[in-house]
Amino acid sequence: MTGLLPGYKTCFFCGPATGGLGLEIQYADGTVFCEFIADQRFQGYDGMMHGGIVAGILDEVMWWALFVETKVISATTKMEIEFKRPIISKETYRAKGQVLEVIHNTYNVTGIIENSSGHVCAKANGYFRRLKRYTMEDVMKHLDFRGVPQEIRSFFQLK
Image (cartoon, rainbow, N blue to C red; front, side, top):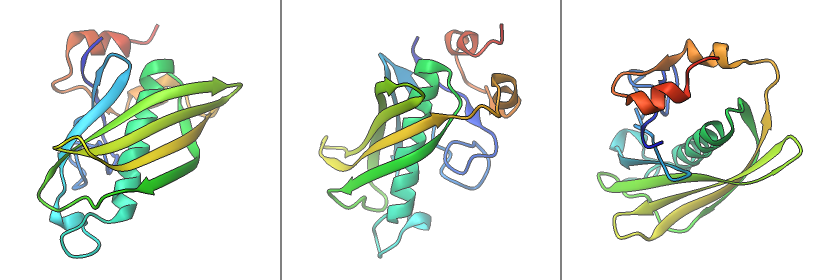
C-alpha cells in the first residue's frame, strides 16, 4: 500500500481546510511521511518555526504511522523531542513516522524532521495508548478522502 492518506477534517495539522498546516501525509513501506514548507505564520523566533508546531508535526506523523500500521485509535501519553537544528521559515522539510514496538497496550513510535539536505532537525520518541472510547466508525466520519488512491481507500473500508 502506497499513497496519500486522508486528512482528519478538523485537525490543525492534517486537516485540509482548517487554516492550519494542511499536511498531506503519505504512506509507503511502513513509513508515514510528508513534506512541508515552514510557513512564517508559525514562527517563534524571527525566521524559525515555533517548537510547539515542530512537536505537533512529529506527533502527527507518529500518530498516523501507528494508525496505518495497526488501525489502533490512540492518544499520545509521552513524547520526548530533541531539537537538533532550527526549522527555517520558507524552507522545505520532510517529516517521517514509524512504529518501533508494541508492549501490551503501549505503542512506541519514532518521528524525525529532516531538511532538504537530509540532516535531522528534530527527532522524537513517543508513546501512545489505545483509546477504547473511539471506534473506527467514529474516526471515519471525520476523514477527507479527496485525492486518496483506491488502494488507501480500501484500507479504510469498514468490515
